[in-house]
Image (tube, rainbow, N blue to C red):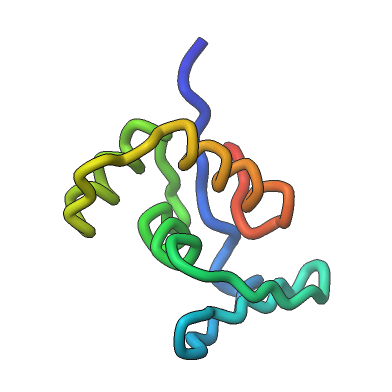
Length: 91
């Protein structure tokens, strides 16, 4: 079974506003504003609209943010939370 491909919700459905240590993400489709912290904004930016598999996303985050101990299980949990909130999707 191939790895699922995760992608960020379409940019026109999200309004992302950095607020000091937090980021507010307004999800137009649901009308909900999510207050999130790192690494959520970084994950959404790395995914982009085209999406990628968990291994590819892990590699991109390691490259961009010099992560030394990337935890695939923790990243999958964050992705599942983002999908449940409507901020990301599985293609």
